[in-house]
Amino acid sequence: QVQLQESGPGLVKPSGTLTLTCAVSGGSVTSGNWWSWVRQPPNKGLEWIGGVYHSGGTNYNPSLKRRVNMSVDKSKNQFSLKLTSVTAADTALYYCARDFSSSQGFDYWGQGILVTVSS
Amino acid sequence: DIQLTQSPSSLSASVGDRVTITCRASQTPSTFLNWYQRKPGSAPKLLIYGTSTLHSGVPSRFSGTGSGTEFTFTISNLQPEDVATYYCQQSHNIPFTFGPGTKVEIK
Image (cartoon, rainbow over all chains, first blue to last red; front, side):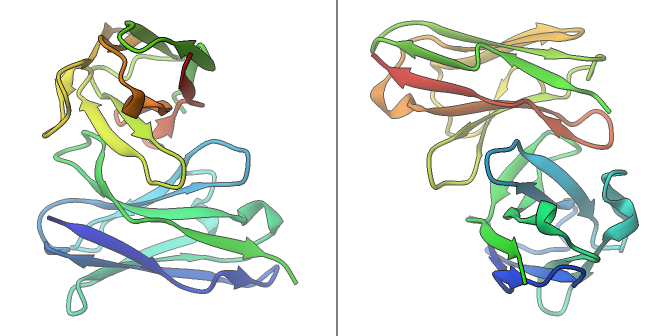
């Protein structure tokens, strides 16, 4: 059973960089799946941020592309999200998730981590 | 971007009822339309992928159908444990997008 666990600071200052890591257990980050980040701001909908493949390939949401970087650390079996120049609008519950079998949705999710952008 | 709308935004039904949710897309996601269940305090759970394929371990009372830009999700025999918010999501075009959700409650 694959399990995902997000970690990172729960509070980030405006104009700073939000960095989150997702640890993968019960499976390998090199399994052939894409690995994604999804967020939900308070009282708003779910937003796909982007995805990363173990080879380093990435797909980003164009609305965030200028500020997003994702990477995979095979040695630690984890993947990461960096979001730069954050504002209060980036306050959200952030999830990491596994893309299931060639763009057929997300079958495993982390529990989510709340990140607040505030001074 | 493919925009997804869902109707209704919420519904209340009795145990044993048949419940139907509609997801409409601004352009066709082909068959790459997925449905999730999300209970309070939990991450979304994949129920149906590829429009109509039940994900592993999902009860058969859940089903999905559709084509083009209109898709339907059905719970055939509503159970108390089905109280949740249901989301459609398209994985055909980048960026992947989600519908706004439909909250299902028990009368």
